[in-house]
Amino acid sequence: MPSTLITGIGTLVTNDPAYGTGPVGLLADAAVVIDGDTVAWVGPAAEAPAADERVDAAGRALLPGFVDSHAHLVFAGDRTAEFNARMSGQSYSAGGIRTTVAATRAAADAELDANLARLVREALRQGTTLVECKSGYGLTVEDESRALRIASSYTPETTYLGAHVVAPEFADDPAGYVELVTGPMLDACAPYARWVDVFCEKGAFDGDQARAILTAGTARGLTPRVHANQLTYGPGVQLAVELGAASADHCTHLTDEDVAALAGSSTVATLLPGAEFSTRAVYPDARRLLDAGAVVALSTDCNPGSSFTSSMAFCIAVAVREMGMTPDEALWSATAGGARALRRSDVGAVMVGARADLQLLDAPSHVHLAYRPGVPLTAAVWRAGVREV
Image 1 (cartoon, rainbow, N blue to C red):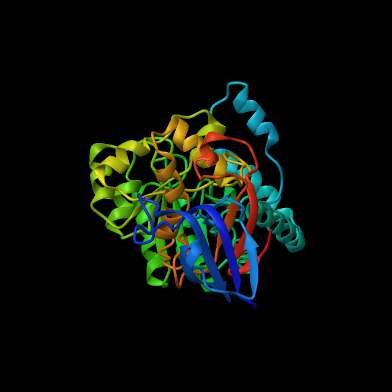
Image 2 (image 1 turned 90 degrees about the vertical axis):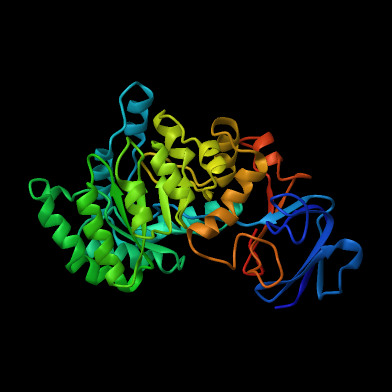
């Protein structure tokens, strides 16, 4: 590929203080050179080297591509009626997942693939250059493995979530379902997955069941992540830290001990404000986690039931308005924080040697992501050095 010089950048977010000021390494009047799929040069526009092609940012802001480290994109069906009922006063519970399970099982591979492709493209148009994708809407050996096989065509960040809820066939035998998840289903899914996840929550899996599932996945070479403490206080966060999980996701209901455990570990607290927005639940307290020293990521939790948004910009705006984050902290969490949650050092930042995942905003500053909520600001996107938008 020809090299590309992006110059005339009003403000460049590098996420590396070595390149600029503040926690997001902000550099004014900047330029970036892309060579192949990587960033080859970063610095002041006046010192930029030549390249084969040139793009004038015309004073607009350039940022790392968003890293969405928690999404459920392999599914079929629609849960509009459930959302409408919640907005009319009914409460949310994990049971709604089973509605999507039935539709997903009935769908052909081509239907699932087309829906996934649509959502990945939708996210890309909004600046998301890397997305994690979970199974969890099949809950049979065949349906879970095909979900991961389909997802692996779109992202290397695939997560085995056979332990989303207990499959309806095993409603009276949850122990039997755990045996399936840790045995034949794991055997079929492990070749297509990097991660193993479990919904550790009332109505899904308790602490002992979650431990067994995560331990089995780890033994097969998968790295754990945990749906933890979303609906109420529980053992999920402590289990995630104990088992060295890359991320504890949701973290809505935390004790002081939970916060301290996250702050003293390498486990990222991934917050998913789209879920609270869509279920009218209390938002997680990002300020409490950040002040304690925990690493925080922001993600969409894109799924058909409790958070049907692919917009990381929306999640940034909600986090700033409702969760005590500054615009700098929210952007870092939606880029570098997501990379940490996926244990990636090649994405989430604009620095020499990083993968060239970039987004140009139709705005002079990244602060506009929170300042202008709901406005589509992404003007251009490069993924692995290729202009996609």
